[in-house]
Length: 271
Image (cartoon, rainbow, N blue to C red; front, top):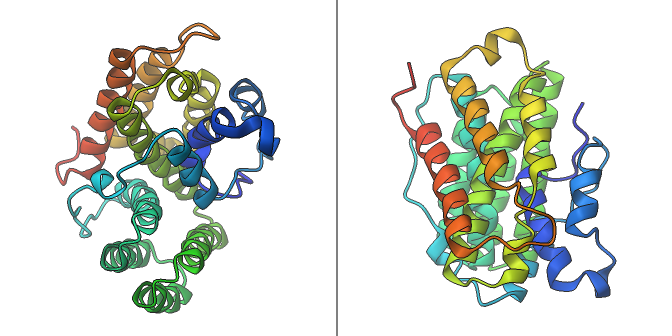
C-alpha cells in the first residue's frame, strides 16, 4: 500500500518549501526528498503549507492557474481516476485563491467523478460541507475538508480492492501539480525555485508504481502513454546536481506535463 499522507502530486512542492525556508522549518531538502521518496513512508506536508511556500518565492496568481471545466462523463475507469487526482489538486488551488464559487464548482465535479468509481456515499456529505465552508469563506477548514475528501476517496477504493486506481488518482494529482508549479516558475523565474525541479528519483518512483498495477490496467492505451511520457519527463528533470534549469528548460517540463494533462482530459482515448 502506498502510505502517502497527501497526494504525491504535491511532493514536488516540497522542494519549493525546502528552498523557501528549509533552514527555518527543518523540512527535507530537495536532495533528501529525492532519496526519501524511494520509501513508501515519506511524510508529505499539507497542501496548504506547500502552496503557501510556493508563494514565498514570489506573489503567485492562483486564479491564473485555473483551467477550463473538464468532462465528468468519462466511462474509462483509469481516465476517471487520473482526472479525479487532477481535480483534487485544482480544489487546493481554488482555496489558495480564496474563490468560494470555484471551490464549490470543483467540489461538485470531484463528487461526480468519485461516484463514477463507486466510492463511499459519505462523499455526498463531504460535498455539502465543502459548499457550506466555501459560502462562509472558511479557507483553513476548507483545506482540511479537501484533505478529508481525498482520504475518503482513497480509503473507499482500497476497501473495494481498487488499489490500482488509488495509484492513478495520486499520479493524476502529481501531473496537475507539476503543471502548476512549472507554470508559476516560468512566469516568475528564479534559480532557487527552479533548482528544486531536479526530481528524477520522484518521477522514477511514480513510474515504478504504474508498473505495479494489474497487467490489464497497465496495458490500457492511456496508462501506457502516461507511463512512456513519464520516462521522457524523468530525462527533463535529470539536470546536474546544484545546477538550476534555465527558464527554457522549465518551460520544456511544463510543456511535457501539459501534453499529458491534455491527453488525460480528452474524451478521445489514445489508440
